[in-house]
Image (tube, rainbow, N blue to C red):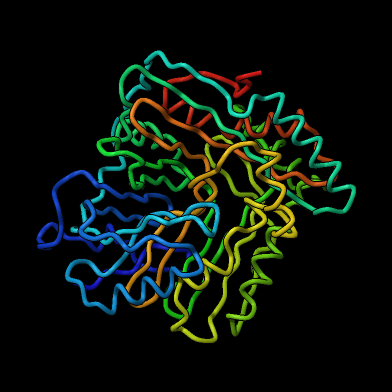
Length: 400
């Protein structure tokens, strides 16, 4: 069957709306892969076949070979690519399309299970890393670097990804995702779930779009203070410099592919339930409509929103400064279609679930003038939505 087009700001129909109960490929079971947000909705059943794993630079060729083989079943590949371009990705062809789970109705109460929480790296190490990064920026090694930290939540019983995803529906402004990953060991399912605010790239026919975000502030509970926080972010020189680096890199990367390319609205405020962000919506028309989405993904990833500038220098500094492996955090989740179309979101505000352990991630862009305490507070605020899904009330200041 033909996969219908996805919902986008480019004005295209949702996958969910196009699925009819009479469709023979429609499964009446819980999705194994799910993306659900203001602009996209796609739910898929368990894998029929896996795409042979490989690095990002070979993804377009592997996907083209897979579709050319004429496999039966839905003609798309969905999954995740890791942060590091050379690491193995995880994409599969689903056996079925699945009806989108209801997005309305009562949201269950947060679980109150006892959890053991540890920070990796400890918060004080993160502040030290920010200080070191600012010194290296001042020395001219790079102009921006995105530093992340993680929290590991350990429970006595396995975490329930489906329940966590239901809890995350509280944030109707973010795009939620739940993506199966290859297990590290037999009998230990592994899954990436999250609520990302950021579209990395979408390609639909000759149209291409991206919405880079960089520069963030925590939202306030009362409307007046919340509005003031957003306006302060728009005026912030540090945050606007940080954002400009991300938006300009996306524009520069897409220009060779496009006949026209623009950011019609300029820099605007973008919001999730808990955070304000500076964002620039970028839209273009491709010179060659046959350009595969996988080629655009490979050209863009990783953007300065998750890495830094220059890319090579920032990448080289990350292992020492962060002190842990990102794995699929700050990679991308999405899908590719047989006709070359596709859509990918950055894997942000997420947790990797494996049995009784869940690893949460959050990062912040570091530029000249970044303050270690403020950057720690920003990452702490970014942890809040995922912590709430686990029933944890915290300001993110964990693991001193």
